[in-house]
Amino acid sequence: MSSAARDFGFGPDEELLRDQARKLLGDHLPVARLRALVAADPAAAYERGERPAWDEGLWKQLVALGWTGLAVPEARGGSAVKMVGIAGLIEEVGRHALPSPLISTLCASYALRAAGDAAAPWLERIAAGASATLATTDAAGSWEPGACEVEARPEGDGCSLVGWAHFVQDAFKADLLVVSARLGDESLLCVVPRHAVGLTLQQNHIHDLTRDQATAHFAGVRVPADAIASREGVAALESAWPAMLVTLAADLCGIGEWQLQTTAEYARTRKQFERPIGFFQAVKHPLVDGMLALDRARSLLYHAACCIDAGDPEAPVAARMAKSAASDAGAFLSDRSVQLHGGIGFTWECDVHLFFKRSLHGQALLGDGVFQRRKLADALIGPIGGARP
Image (tube, rainbow, N blue to C red; front, side, top):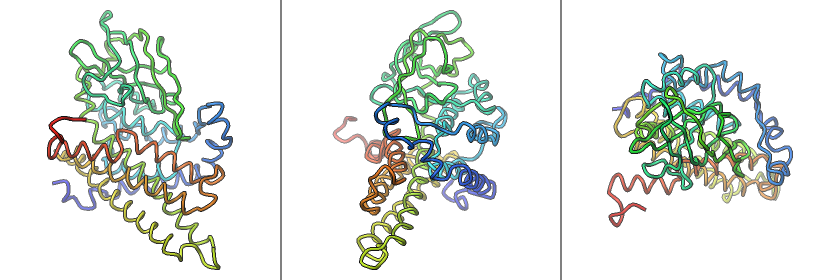
């Protein structure tokens, strides 16, 4: 069983990868640099609707280190890092609120990896440095059969795409879109370049300043046969789902760690009534509760990652548990980090809001804690009332 693996299978290689990420991001993306990138001007984000900036130079360094190929098999030019190793690295990504298409690229890689041999050339491109994202959900956020709003119409030896895909993460940073489409009774996964003729990206206004999001409109986008990565797209997405949940849970745990440590440090230095505010129970107890929530989420995170690495059939359940706990811990720590910073906690000048907003977005992606527990209940004890919501 995967649960018997020592330290969840997190060994020296995974520790080295995590430490490399911690040093690189610590050196190149301190919080002052992050603030300058994404929060220099509140009017730019919330009045003019400009897309947040990101450090493309830093992204090139990550590509050179092979981070885009972390989830790509070695036979396709990637490094095939274990899921526990990816979780450790993504915790550091969350701890620094890294603006980049890395998480989106990993999620697209999981889907393409599950798609089979037809996806091999696209995995090789990702391993070589291409970024990617998933365009697989309808307006309600579902990618399940019947929910897809993109239709594939036969055209020559390939097809053309017509319709809409919603909630496309980091769409303006991605080189490739992995699109879910219906073709009769088939569910396709197609790979479309971001600048393809007929593809229009409509920017969504979101609160997270470290990501962008778009609605993709396909107006007869031509897809050649070799860009159809799978004709069993829903099955590929179902197979990739646990890894996606674990990746988002790791990002949430990293964000929560920054919130906890930053708030604890503030409680040690901020004084009221001639004492550090951390002296008072109304401050110290929420900090301890946050630490416990984060430790619980991290334990479930690495258990789920270990299950994926071991091919454990319980991996989908473990991944939902991890995302549920990480979302709940993120909500609690976000709330307390603002409250315990007192009068400055809700201001634009306080860096807390950057991590608060990234956490809030991550909690909702692929379903928050309540959603995950409902799905767990359906899977373990059956739908309540005999029908799914």
